[in-house]
Length: 338
Image (cartoon, rainbow, N blue to C red):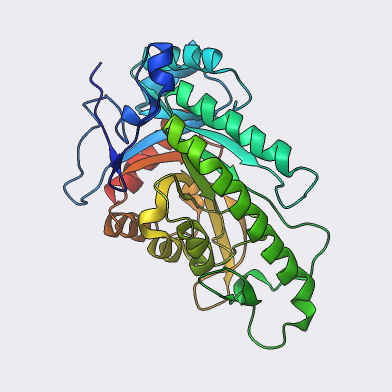
């Protein structure tokens, strides 16, 4: 099997776990796969995008199906697993010429002091498991807002924040007195998340696995500029954004998120969202989830925006409703810019 190397942020990604287990470390894989048929640059765009699906743990049958449907790899959600067991799964997947490119840790609540330590430890477990899987990224949502806090409507968010500390001044134009509790919760979440992420960077570097912070409906970092500032705050090779093309469409267009996140983008999720009533200058509005091919998202513009920021990497489908084969066809069209 031909294994290539990827340089990210000027540093060759690497880890030690692969050597211990007798395999190649997570970071020594390219952003794509060893499938030479798909390892080509689209002549229309100066970037490569690889197709993946998401599953808890893949079976032989699932790998067969993905390979036959033209996928390059997959993302797994089983994070609480021993490195030795994860390595066995890796061997299974790579036996089909596929790759596990990412591990989805998903939600934690580090803004809850009672859960901070246990949640951070869970991400440590996920980072070690990811390295054994052969993945170079862990998707993580650090925390969320709850409890009925008064917030602006999605399209009214206009966050003014200190770029050095990320402390929020206002979250919308006009009188912000009704948002006082939410602003305090946002600041507390930012502070707790920074502490958690900074404590995990050394482990991420040791394992050769990056921390991908996802834009998700957690009611924090709700605008492209603010979320981008949060991801860039760490100024680290090992921290970036895991951009979901579909999430946060109610706040602003996908293209705006791509433009602001730029080189922080580590990986992509893709799902559909349909705006039924446009509100706000950045194209957000009232809507609901839809299938990718029924979304009110301009996928051609999205593909161009990804090329503009020179995104090279993975795009994982995060929805159901079509067959694996149909989603593969849809991704082919999006990747080709059609």
